[in-house]
Length: 468
Image (tube, rainbow, N blue to C red; front, side, top):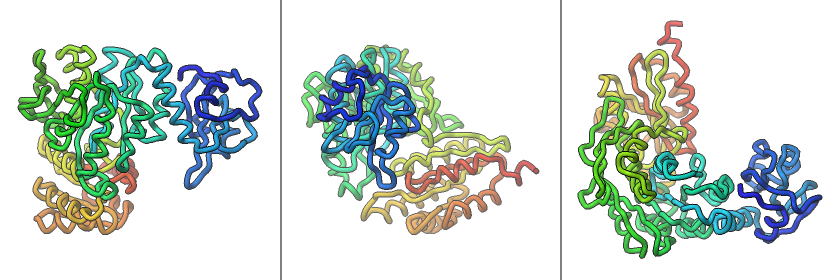
């Protein structure tokens, strides 16, 4: 974080100092929300959550080196006291940093129903060739994670790459008030969280707020293969560059192939020339994610050959997104359990089928429910079951409640071998009984289902296969 004195921070956030011996003491390290992460020079943000109140840990954070805590009541330790809301005050600090110490940094903002984090990870691995980069850790894309990411940057940062999520109309606008974008990337408009938004048109309205926030000299990077995203060009006076498989896209992928590991390759076509890209990540969905990064890299002045090389060397940076491991006994586990929506579920199942067929192996899908789909929930889950059956997967195992049952019922009706199991323990027992060397197992569900726990359990070698 750009060094700031406690008195300066108090002025920016509209607070006052309490129990502070030295108002000129400098905050020099990023902000933290967990007292265990506090370090010398950090600022502790005392958030009050559903299960715990950060105010109770302020003293512990200071004892670990935090210069002070941002609070709404005295905590018996050095603190900046605000009257309204800690999170709102933290947002004001983030905005001040973006407009002050970080005003020379290019703010690259990314949103979309799916692919935000993977796109952010690609961009964060391309842009270092053009300058220092700070990017959103994991998928910290809300009003908490955004200012937190900003505090990771300093005056040397040239690119600030920020993932921005939304739970409704107006949410992205509030995030762009903190960090106005210079480049806005919109990946797609799907059905993720459609129950909260009330329809895809409302999702498009919300995601388009990122494009509306651009200055005239800014850049909108839009997916040409998504009509709702492509239409966002009308919502900005900034430059627009499109990407996709569409022949009308400015930056395109052609000659697409997928290898036996499920990793796509393509020819990157730009106005300046072409180059071959071989991605190291699994799934054809990564083509669009990487193309968006190509547009951003091109705007930063990188040549097509350099961009292709950087995309080809990019690796997965965020956990539980097509995270692939092969056990010593030859069983491959694909942990894609961070989140799920109909679009990402179909893409992951298709990738599973490709991986298995490439090595003449069995494909087994372990699926949980997709949350926040509203009235479309049953139809969406049944469509996933039918899609799994159409891919001729060897086994579909649906884990959880009624929604998982909809997947199994539809898959079975379409001719697939499918089971519906009530919990992870039962699913693990079944998997132990049917897995054999060479099998490829995909584990995917919405975040709240916590199927990453099952994936982690599956990473342990099965004693029945090892012979122990």
